[in-house]
Image (cartoon, rainbow, N blue to C red; front, side, top):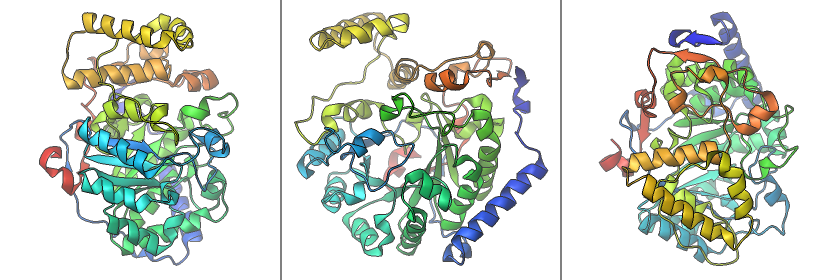
Length: 458
């Protein structure tokens, strides 16, 4: 299938898009009733930029203890298994050590604190205050249930919290069904009202599960009404526990072509409202060209200041930094690494022998250093992006991708998705030249710069 860049077709004509938006407004009104959010957005003034610089944000996982049972959760099994090494919350001292390391070793100046659910971490206010004290501006990634109590919001902002990243997985009963707790959406609405009243900035995260997709336009409208500054739409990919057979099927994973119409309407609304929108892990050819600026594959991710620095993420994602027991491991340096290609399977089998794993890595590091001499930081991050996409996630390309102008900046189709649905949805984008600069289109997006980042982010 071949198409030109200006024919990256919207999946629905204007009349259908208008109908989708009307249905979304009606859904919101039926669920929210007389909520004061319908008085209109009260979004705080922010600075924006089109300059793209590498993020300085880190992440810490406190433990997989949670008060929800989300169907899409990357740590679904760990949350259900109280005996899992990553289930219990770590001590405050271990969390502080991780935060201190990402600040002092990796130079990060912001951090996403998540669980499980970080608001139920017993010493969360102390950790927030510690992060602020050492120059690491904290965000909580939260399902917001606890934050329906205004005093909990107030205590966190008093401790030095910068903002909340709120999980919104649909509207009303759909959200409740996806997260596995009746009444959860009503609590999210109360939490958003509390944040607005207390002037606490907040952003939205939405995983594009099959049930959520038809409600994406309504979620965009909710973001506009409530005053959210950013909305992230995340493809439902099989990270962590979702890799297990049977977790992801066509019953909960939508086809990309079924996502496109609703997602496009949502992005159009957010664009018109001046709200930053980001789409994670989605093929470029599945979006109209006007929204390529919002599309973040692995090569674009490190240029979003609300995403995680690949260097510190490589360390904090290791098991030693996600368990309640034991000390942290030594923090590695991010360096260029050779892709193993067809040898990856053999390498993984060898690495399965514990004693051989360090030797295998040492050999790979030395070969990479010899064959890939020192590069700029941007080149190292681009190399790491390819390793994450091709090596860790097994992304696949279709024949249509072979001559696509965007192949150099697009990951293609996640390997698990390709096994489920194939790759025939791919379309060739013909621009007359090959695009290799991962920041080309995202440089057209106006991204928020928080006050603490003005000196380097603008």
